[in-house]
Amino acid sequence: MTVDDLLIRKAEKADADEVFALAREFGLTFRPEREAFDAALPELLANEDALLLTAVINGHIHGYLLGFVHLTLFANGPVAWVEEAMVGSGSRRQGIGRALLEEFERWARTREARYVAMATRRAPEFYHALGYEASATFFRKVLR
Image (cartoon, rainbow, N blue to C red):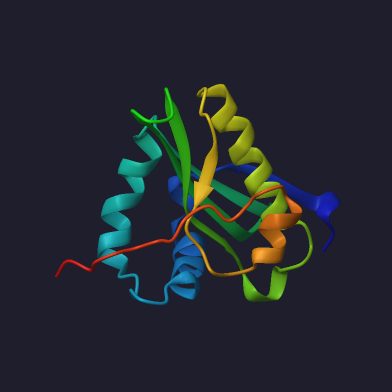
């Protein structure tokens, strides 16, 4: 498997099984449930403010990225937010994450986003290498 074989494309409904398997690997606090996943996927694919990308090598999905663009008041326009970025554990350090993020950045620019951001504690050296900088503390409250 080489990066030359890598295809970054928008997700399709037919990708559901492979993306779900990666989402289960991604989940730490929440355990993705298939019924909720199957309800969300078509809505995300139809949402013009969302982009669900897949990283495909030899017909199989090795990673995905889900992000959104939304309007803000403080940034004088829209910003882009990466909600989920996942590369399968056996496929890391091969340029897949970089390719997913770069494609998301291209899309965000077409949407006139002022910046791309995400909340993560994972792989800070990866994000620094791509020009990202630590910016804020992330707070959350789980609603049950």
